[in-house]
Length: 382
Ligand SMILES: Nc1ncnc2c1ncn2[C@@H]1O[C@H](COP(=O)(O)OP(=O)(O)O)[C@@H](O)[C@H]1O
Ligand SMILES: [Mg+2]
Figure (cartoon, helix red, strand yellow):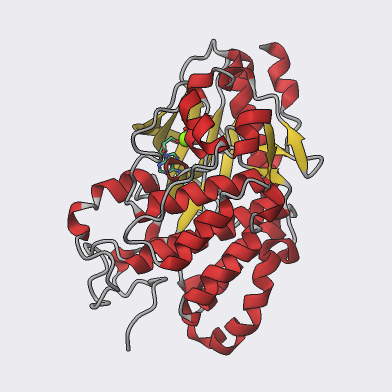
């Protein structure tokens, strides 16, 4: 385990003193890692005040493979830099890595993972196919189609940012998307992510994930299942499955199928899931396109973003752009990404947003709902 520390030739600016963080309740647990809530004093972006954070660690300090996976996740997070639709790194405690302890500190997302959130809000969503009528019901309101579309747009944006950074996610699923305040969705869990040196790679998955039982079969592209080939375009396939999860409010994909040979065979024979009843037709088309057998025929994340954007009211887009300016600022401070990288294809939207520029002041936008008068990313009716 000694050599693990050498695996972290990382920028000391990310190091956070262990004594300044208090660990709390568990937020989630996987086979090898767990995530707990924490209180950090004086961490990035909070001055000297206490900030609620999420801390990812390995479950067993003797599991070297799990530690390696977490080191790799930390490296990816550092490489990525900040984006509003990606869960952002705040710091790390690496000093005790030779004893198997590594804490990766990320921003806390109050509403947890998207899949659980969708499932928990099913009962209240009988009318979720209707656009919400009353914009004042912001805290306890049910999920509307508008929310689902907004999340699908934000996830595409987060994934477009990953693609622009040449990072392959490898495990995109609703369980790995987190919900923060103000309806903001963030792509998370980079435990299977890889930095691509070529646009397409044949991945030899890390030791701990090679067990077939741990592969996210129902989210994997046909070429990943058959030939272990991964690319941004295989992430696009997974995105199609996430759309399906969104519009079924968190159902398990391919109902009636296990995650075994039978399903893989069916997909190879051309079987694909149907459009969920409540999904707008456009989203049915998007799913079909994401699940094209030839990866080259699938849309790029930038195209998905643009198509969904066209479907939304323009105020939403411009508001998101303005909010993201805050993250551009973080990147400039950390010198990890340029504003140009950040916007990617969304630059197209900048023009639109200029018209609405004066509507929102960037630094005012991260108010939490409890402050009243909170910013909502959903279009408000006049
Ligand atoms: N930043 C966070 N804020 C709130 N909850 C989180 C956060 N990170 C993770 N979680 C919770 O923990 C679960 C597992 O986290 P994840 O990063 O996906 O780890 P794993 O690699 O074990 O799947 C998530 O599905 C979510 O419910
Ligand atoms: Mg996960």
